[in-house]
Image 1: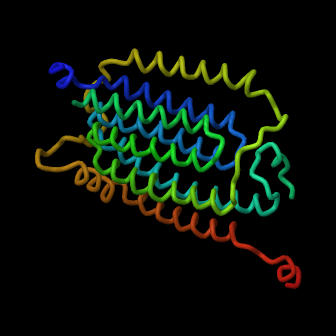
Image 2: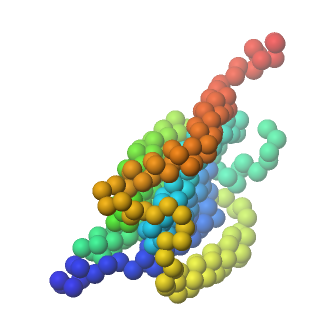
Image 3: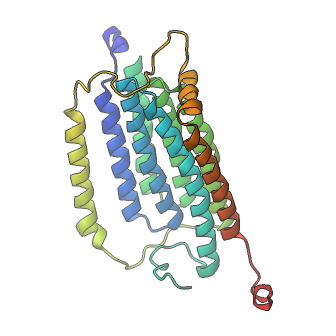
Length: 107
Length: 176
């Protein structure tokens, strides 16, 4: 137990976790049929990539990786605001959130 | 200690992500996404990124997810309905995702010895400086222009969101 307490985490596990999170995001993007949940899956993918950025910043002792994550967060915030506004506009035009029913660009 | 915390919060993270996929109601998916984001904030703390952990909780788990839950409640989004749409994701999508995960896992598990700090500014330079000081020093000196451009991006996003979500009455726009 004591050697378990002092053991450092191999950074490969962080990268593996980030790869799994990204792939779960892709799966959610494919199988979910609700527009909002599809959008959440995109956020999950972004988070998975962010984790690998922070891991590499830790590994290489480079501050640039963390700054990149900061910018990704800002862009994700802007993307969420615009994307949810588009979802509201689509819902107003179609009165549905099912992606199978939103299959035409023209209103 | 780090290993136990990592295993605990990585398990939380994966459980939240899998739960997001299996829930049919969007509000449950949003709540499990919050679990994922808070667990990731703890993992950032373990990796020595204190500022990013705080930003993750404030920006992602706070702002973005509140926006999501607001939209879910505003649009009264119910249970997702499954229609007889395309089934291509079963044939093409899932094998592609499995291959992607296999390639990523193989690459990631065979990385060792990624070299020293050959990538510019070091994280652990001066002994007394914290993570936030190092981050802000680079952000406000070398990367000042991208930082300011990001603020313009946020402003444009606000204006775009307001313009897109605004309710326009058809008769008034037709009259003009």
